[in-house]
Image (tube, rainbow, N blue to C red):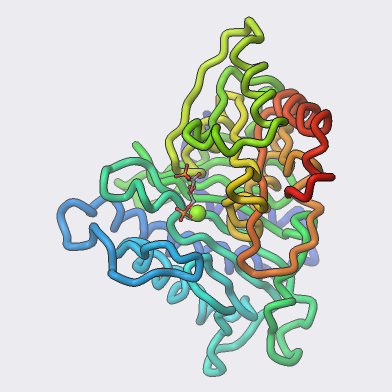
Length: 338
Ligand code: AHM
Ligand code: MG
């Protein structure tokens, strides 16, 4: 472990590798880090201040909005809107695109985020996280107003993707297409310090993560894959937190597979393509893993809706390939799923 390299220093060194870089991206990322620290502080104080529980409203997905969801959403918007690097943002918690107010300068980037993933776990002290994805805005800062369709870019076009996990410690993990790096927040100095450089996901994992209560809805490909795992004679174990960030993070470090596949109840899956699947797919691939719908690569899906859902099978390369093979054998794609 390298001790003492701050995220700011690491980002500046990355920036210097590109002499023509304007520094805009580094500055945008620094604003996001401020939001992450604010949310982390609030998550850590959650039992002490009146921020647990629901707000009483529902989001675009029809899900109950938690107070901390709301807080995290506002913290990110406030930290990002005045920096001059974004044209617009889109949040899992908001119906429409968040345009940067005309009183602030606009930049070349678009930010997508899930402010607090795993919110059903907030009130019971289980890890939650923020997921983000940064895209280039093809219209440029002075182009006409950004529209929803400007966000409809496949995962392969992401400039950066990452997440912050608020767990036993707060960690930020990100990629810009040059490996995956992890930083742990040292609360005594208020800085993210490099703790996991160039993370590689084991090719094969011991862990599988799926909500088994959905087994009655599973497609034959999923059912067969889970049966195979249980019978393969390898030293396998099941782990399911119910916070995507936490399940993904554990599998990234230890090796394993996470599945939230399309099924007979949710033909398109549950998780959101642009806020959850695409950013984590970028990280998985950069760490040597894979991300698939079961029938194709997540990173190549051309989005058609801001809040589009997708089937997601993500994790260690060989495990995801095995799951894909089961799906293929049962032709789920031909039956209209994913
Ligand atoms: P959220 O973004 O509203 O929190 O929902 C997404 C969460 C994921 O974190 C998690 O993997 C999944 O939903 C769990 O769903 P389920 O409770 O159906 O197993
Ligand atoms: Mg989420």
